[in-house]
Length: 165
Image (cartoon, rainbow, N blue to C red; front, side):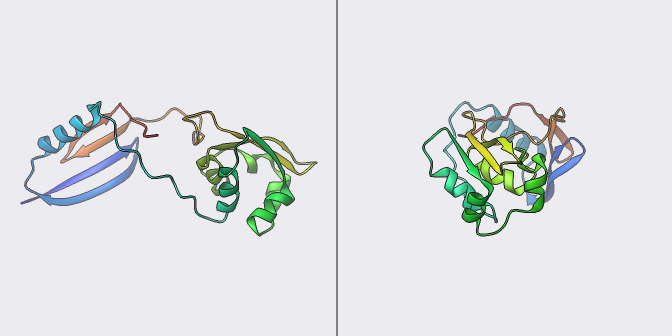
């Protein structure tokens, strides 16, 4: 038995680092991944994402709606959440950006909505349904670095990404 190291790189960042004991050779594991990545058979759908965290009640509310858009006051949102929004929500339009690196935006984008038409003077925000397949906004406008799978020191660039809906 050998120890096989499997890593997933996103440019310079290591997203996954796993060591496992196996009798498989690195090229066999790479071939298995290549087969998996090029398979045209549909994957089983994943269960719905359960939104957690302090902004989950807002996401849960949005998830129950049938209309394509809704305008909410900050007071209505606070009532749903059970706590007062931070001062930055009233002072900075950027707080309402659809940037999934922030917990509040991750909640509504995961639920399939995007913020729009933020009125800091009137203390309102409009939420609109995200176009199909775009529930989560991109994390940045910067070009993505290639994702690479490294198995036993052999690098495999991942150029095909299959989204599961």
